[in-house]
Image 1 (cartoon, helix red, strand yellow):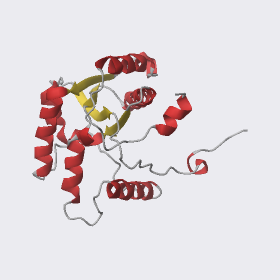
Image 2 (cartoon, rainbow, N blue to C red; image 1 turned 90 degrees about the vertical axis):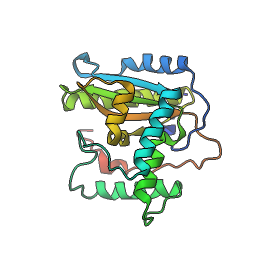
Image 3 (cartoon, rainbow, N blue to C red; image 1 turned 135 degrees about the horizontal axis):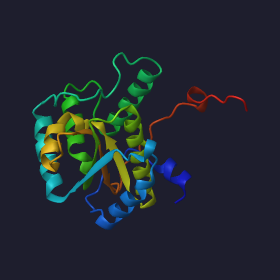
Image 4 (cartoon, rainbow, N blue to C red; image 1 turned 180 degrees about the horizontal axis):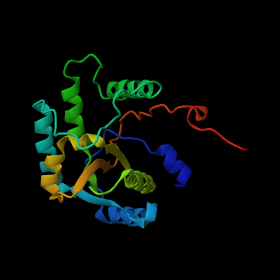
Length: 221
């Protein structure tokens, strides 16, 4: 699989099979991903790879919180900016409607928030979740570095025939995650990334993207 194919076929999969992911594949991906760029070569990320019984226990705890209507832990950073306006709000609303209709959750369902939280807390059935943390002393530049690192990881997963789903939702249950992985208090959870093989027979949802002219300007050529 070449890099263009990996980029084009990468999408947030929300229906994983229970087929296990070999540890050697994860080690190969995460070793290769160390070549991701970071300013000053700080490599500011720290990843916990959770699977097996520890992940099952984490899912049980998080799903119990979700089904109980727990609003989650106090945010350590905003998931989205306050006062999100067009065109960003339009893109967000369109993608959210498409995404959760595909999962059988209608926009006017009164139990929609709880159902969404429960699906997320089950990692959509994924057998592995990567939890990416950064040192609290890091700034916006290092958060950008972590994004480049995670994209590198997700593209390498595609090269291995695997899929992924990045989930900022896990920050809602950051204390539960931190307890299970024994994360140092000096670290802040950026997100989780669910990893696995896509469940057969699942509709392949691809959310739309803005036209190139909306997001790119060519200057001088």
